[in-house]
Image 1 (cartoon, rainbow, N blue to C red):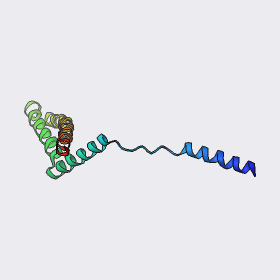
Image 2 (cartoon, one colour; image 1 turned 90 degrees about the vertical axis):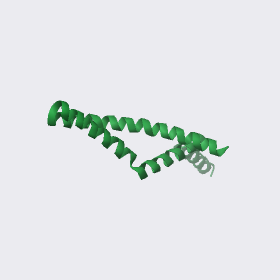
Image 3 (cartoon, rainbow, N blue to C red; image 1 turned 180 degrees about the vertical axis):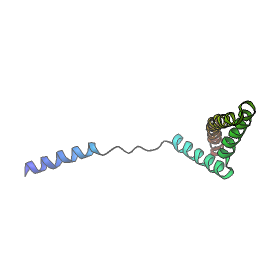
Length: 108
């Protein structure tokens, strides 16, 4: 009987280590998640990413086409699209930070 209790106790101890600890999300993480969701919803509604990447690709293609013909337009479009993705990422990051600030100001 004593061995059964010891076996059950050791089994309980071993399974408690196997279960990962559940961590609560901090207030600032929730604030960031909320701001990110707000910015992404607005961007999706207005198609901001498509406008920025597409416009950059067209601009790169025009410049490339003027300088290097058809092949230059293709290369310029690809480079412009890549630059547009980077610009959109920076713009989105800035928008999220601004939205976090607005949410903080509304809270107080």
